[in-house]
Image 1 (cartoon, rainbow, N blue to C red):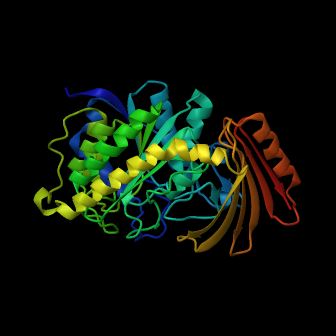
Image 2 (cartoon, helix red, strand yellow):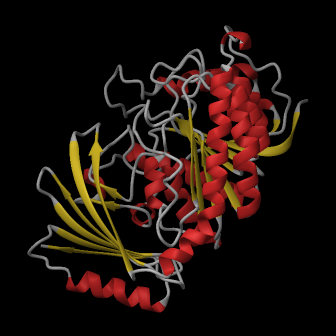
Image 3 (cartoon, rainbow, N blue to C red):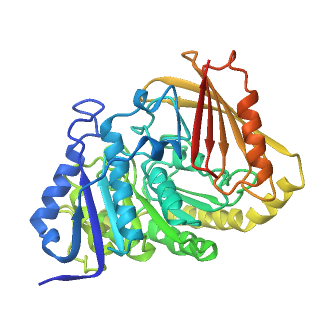
Length: 438
């Protein structure tokens, strides 16, 4: 009987009752074909591969990460809670050491969902990886976490949530934002004042193949992870870099994904994008599962796989080498950049416009961060949509110092209810969430 080297847990949740519309790329068939392939290959009969049923995330789990306006049930469905709960289930199994690694094959996805949520953007309503991570931090006292996002689209939601967190390393490996939604994820996006350098973006040119992805992994991602020394590595395992994906322009393969997983050795993988439903996802997912379990995946291949036809050009290879050098330079400059902020003004503002492409909402945000030498700093967010909904939200970070805690409550108490529809407080030091309404 076949046996894994590393015991691996799986959760499947196709979300039969949720789709943007019946013909949308993000629909239940994304996982149904994968389930069929897993059963056909007999993976669940292998000693050491275990399937778990997803639990449901709670509203409290959501509130550790998001400010949902006007409330959680206005922006999500039960399927979103089960998707986040499936990631949480795998996280618990890994932390309890019942499995060495785990893979949550769930939908809807989540890596475009930011801290403030007014609706859906990039097919995402809530950030399922962040919800899992913050639950694990609260329950198991995990501190340093690395998230490696290998979806073809920049993980702008995860970046936003951890922009000011020096204890979370966020690395996004994606198609250059000049050529693909959401148009962000450039090397100079390094993180906020108190966390500069802990956001790492690796924008790859269109038509990057296995050679380019693995070069970026070996020469940038793995050395940075070695420096950061995370307690937990989470892979946002988007699969839309595949050469047959209908909405992207890359040339990755099932073999490439499996080899990337083997070298990265994530503790937890969570499915994100990937829209080549029949010709890519079943093979990619089987390869990832076998790599997580440390099994031989050399025979996992798409029926039309011809590596010579998807090989990247020399120009593409040179561009990837240039990007990697820029990335490493940004990583090295992180401590120096943080010191400059600490020696500068006590507050750092940030203004942004955020478009919810799925729900057609335009949000205007004004952030204000207290630059603190003792913690990540208390953060306020003034958020207004073009529909006229206006909120004020305060985030007190998980390891906030006393001064930042006191300032957070002061901001919350003094916010004018005549200006805002709602006023929120997310106090991570006490795992508390408060809401005041106009």
